[in-house]
Length: 290
Image (tube, rainbow, N blue to C red):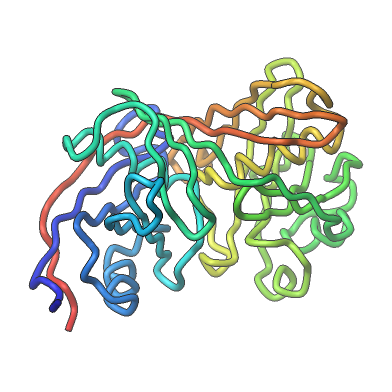
């Protein structure tokens, strides 16, 4: 079937305490007939960190399928495109609120949607050794004295990220060196964060390889991976479910709030969730390329 001449889209702010905060996301509805090349061109036109394309599921146990594109590449999974897509489907009346089953490149995942936002369950937790923290610090423009002595594991629940723990006063000084990061094994990107044990809050900045090492204002997949890393480094309980918060995007003028949980057994994470608010800001039609 030929692709339509235009498609309906919405723009929503995800993990946003208010409009024009959080991470903006374009959501393209009824995208089944779009080719990969057309999806990529539309994502490049929107020029946001990601665009979600909503399609009918191919898995019998899924409610819908989402394809996720940065301006440069397709991703198997990402947090804020999943949360924003699910909430948009419910808010526009296409699916009922409650637990939705999302099909994506990482499998079929649960997303629980309510009136304000959504909670996403990540995929299977993964944990690997990461680069030397001093080398990773140098690759993001920091020095050896800026790190706090924790390992820079590569951890994830769908997409892996390296986590570099630094002192609170140096988080804003991080500046990625793309060539240096390309030479290190950091998964999909690096989260430079400080940890406040009193409030179980991480203040993070995330630099993603699929954004050509640009900064992301809110990264649900990295927030999920942070839980895996927090358990592995002993900052959260080794055999319980712990709640934690990730603050991100402040230095970009887009403050974001990601509310998370991680469940652990035997000192290793077994699952994680990330939740946040979704605020609609725009809607319209866009021409389909070619």
